[in-house]
Image (cartoon, rainbow, N blue to C red):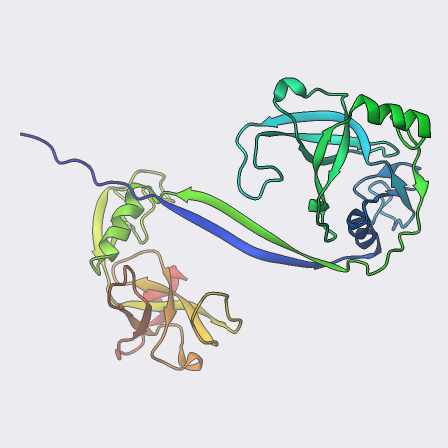
Amino acid sequence: MTSASPPQVLRAPLVVEFPFTRSLGPVQSAFLTGLRERVVLGVRTGDGRVMVPPVEYDPVTAEEIRELVEVAPAGTVTTWAWNGDSRAQQPLATPFAWVLVRLDGADTAILHALDAPGPDAVRTGMRVRIRWAAERTGAITDIACFEPETERERERERENGDGGAGGAATPHDGAFADPVTGIVAEARLDYTYSPGRAQTAYINALAERRTVGERCPSCHKVYVPPRGACPTCGVATTDRVEVGPAGTVTTYCIVNIKARNLDIEVPYVYAHIALDGADLALHGRIGGIPYDQVRMGLRVEPVWTDGGRYPDHYRPTGEPDADYDAYKELI
């Protein structure tokens, strides 16, 4: 006699991304525009320190600061960590070191990548220089990376007096033609998601147009979607219970802003729905009724699309509204 193999736990790649848009004040505008022009600017604080990258308010006194200064494109590594597995969107496609570099004339360090053949070629105290991007737009990526400074470059600095360790910052008015006034930063997170044993069973049941939760053996509450453990008692839940398909709207909101890549016309209603037999409300969109007629206590049922693995939305069943006392504990 052989025992049945346990069901395979689901895994899938997941990407969360959104554009973050911000306007720039005079300090950040000058800093990013300066990078476009191969100029590194910092700001002098009330106690005389030079901060690179610059900030708009003194970290000690919280006073607004506007005194811009130019620092050298070369500096000293203060600390570092080797990155042996380069990922998408990182500065370099090959392994590199993350470094904190105190540029000559600055009192603080800037974080960026150092192009080096291996960790043995990196050390605290080494001299490095900015490698500028071939095309610059007024962003931190205008610094393609740092690279080790050659002896010839160090000798030229000493001869010209235009840098070197301990070099002084020089005043700068921050004026550039066509200044950068705003940026759009694409925030993105790529990862592999696994819903675990309990939610894998829940998702597989949805594909069969069934909604399955799990009952706590201690308090006997039925959780949908199941979590594998009771959040109240802290014990594992293994007893599966089919609930619904109908349920009751407990609370809801009206959505008036259209989401990108979501083909739903606004306004629409998104609600918490307590399915019959469940002790936890789940989320769902309400359709088949004008948005201004949705209400607490409305009885609804799922609507499935052909080939859909989960309900597309919920619509009214036509039953009388549920009494408030029947769902008040689920709000």
